[in-house]
Length: 211
Image (tube, rainbow, N blue to C red):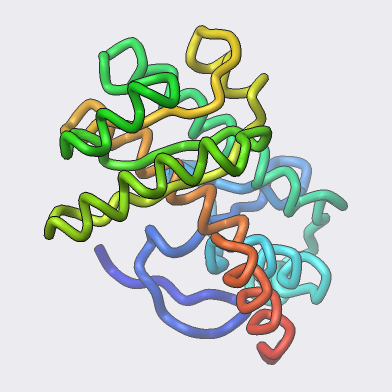
């Protein structure tokens, strides 16, 4: 796909690395995550720091060359939309048999090479996370694939999406059924800055960008 230019950094990137925004009927800026809303759009790097900077520094109005209103919580709105999309995709993957639940089953799925990614609830204990991390490292040591791990949702959010209770650990299975869920998890994680260290780097980079 053709590259687009971020209105904050002025750097070109692929559409998957950006979020499209359009002007709604009420002149308000609207996030267009599916990239299918009508009207002229503009693009911002797909992380919270750059979206917040675009909102606070009047980048949308300058890029679109028209008077617009920016929702005061635009960054949080995008986060909520991305989270809803990811949870919905996880629910569909669960119905398609592409999700494993429970610490023991997740660890087994990782060691068997069937897991594409691991998901821990915010409430996950250090011990539970450590055991599954050991399994991930064992697979990598055996020259298997690197299996990423994410902590994006609360136990309640995961339980609601996956139709269970006490959902602390889950694995997204490799294969077509899990690809959509993993893609949306990656997008949400990127928007939130990834690891705590990555979040600091993203925030610092956004602060250094010229207007």
